[in-house]
Image 1 (spheres, rainbow, N blue to C red):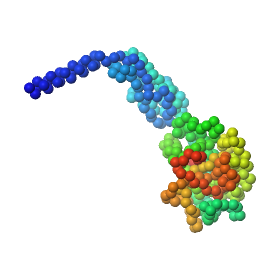
Image 2: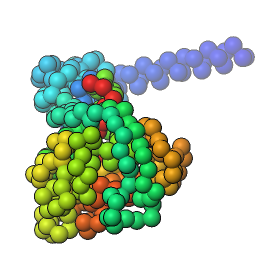
Image 3: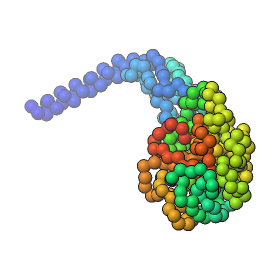
Length: 336
């Protein structure tokens, strides 16, 4: 009895399978899970075809790219960016040529336009003698740094988009290819740097707080100005005193550079540093990197909405690493 039951059950399954296969419908339509795709050079993203109806008798599809120099696609719908540009990825069914397509933009990562060499040296970190100061800017202490490269300009929105592969999220007042990328959290910046390094094979990073202040002061060419490049803030910075409400953020590089040829280290948009915030030690330091643990990250330089007091070279800001209140940045390399 058991053998007969098994045979009957097996035959029933076969009949159901045959009936199902024979009654599958032809493909009525094909679509893709994305109509628009942004991919970076060297990055692979999968497109998934959607067959209508799901039990169509032939679900095999073919793929093609209108420009294989820009992006290629394999038989499984994996799209790989090859070079900057635009292409169209098409998918079509074997049985009746139903097609769908996706517009693909491949972004070539844009690196900093120019990196400025900052020769190593020793300087006094903290407020200028006789100037105004806040408690956490003291004690003024000696710091010795090795040489490094720092970007001439802050990272721009165009550069940000080319690496993060996203549409602009900035409002009209703050939007512009040559304006600083802002409203970025410290965590966002770490993702940006990780992606940029993976795409370029280089080792960009944020400056330490000490590196930032040393560069802002003009390194070993410093004239010990209050602001980065001058004692007259209007010469070197966009800040509350000279910024119009309807046009708050400005393109990089419009003001006078500092002694090293670096722009906008005072005003326009404040800048993230790599360090946790902590009190200064009252001892000489060599290549300090800040505390090993903390709650806040250092942010420097002041912004278009800041009073001049907050745009000084010595001013120390702090903010939670996940906050997007302001937050621009520039990049550093130890070697090129």
